[in-house]
Length: 115
Length: 110
Image (cartoon, rainbow over all chains, first blue to last red; front, side, top):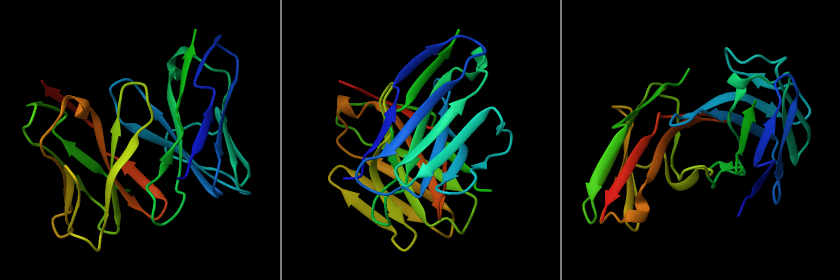
């Protein structure tokens, strides 16, 4: 089945530094990748949609200069949290639609802690 | 945009009983409705889905019903087991735009 590999699974960084999260589609081509953020005991909130070869589409209220998204190939999308602050600490998870007959496939998530 | 509401937020049942989780959506153009199960700290896992041209779908102990007119859909779990305990999310999707409900924390007591 369709697999999305996400790395790192956990990261602790200092306030003010940047963190890059990668999502790779392993056995299918992901022209689109969704990036979600999930706070404890809350739902998944869509942050942005990345499209291979074009600019990402950001949801209202999400700072595009802070959450940089790159989708340079059909198998790789990255989210960079720039100048991270403690309030950015969250569970970040990507998802891709592998095809008409499959549900959206999620990466394993990245737990970011900014200290 | 699409707005998905999910109820209840928490649900506790005795092992062997049935559990029902309900969701409503606002955009009549939404045509794909998946349900995900998420265990603590893990990725959501698709457990069942339904498309707008189908009214009901069943997979062993899990079933989903869809009422397009009323714009609501429900997840039914029968003969619940302790391992069914998790957070369940419904979602509504139109094209590549998928929105999630707030989640239901299901606890199955042995």
